[in-house]
Length: 241
Image (cartoon, rainbow, N blue to C red; front, side, top):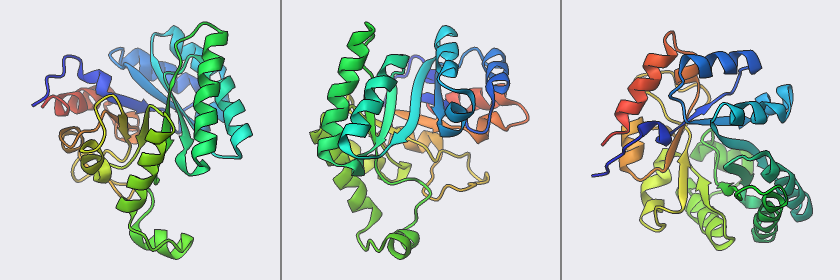
């Protein structure tokens, strides 16, 4: 059993599909929100200023830009991104060990330049939209998703990253290998019976926490709810186990 003093620490609100006005309205409506995820859509539409605004509101930031390029480019991107004050920054683990190690070093250097605590870099393993069938047909990868996720998580750990992003379906096996200090951040969280949208490998919030997830990324189930504040509270109740 886990004693969770502040369940809101376990939930990262994905601000996908929102503009700055919508984001500020949500934060005002649900002041208990601790973590928010700034993804590609919001970052591209509103720019890095949205991160500063959220930090000024006292929120912790998961900057989910999923960097994936040659090692030098990934490292330079993480160097700059670390200066935003984001606590988490994502990059694709399949960029390779050299890129991940360079990125981790660059993130520490970038944060130090502006006297900030260095972020934890999170390695994206296999996106929750992939199924075994599409994995094989689109990418010609016949290896199981479970094995691929385990391999990529190992690369993230060996490269010194602070954790990885995986679906709830892989959390339990990974937690048996990695300590609590290695963050296992899981999107694909849905209420039982709800629309899965474009996610494939999903789970209920309480199940994901029991299996060892560090934090849950939850977006549309809360942000597009008729009562976001009540839905947020409902998810907080589910992570108290």
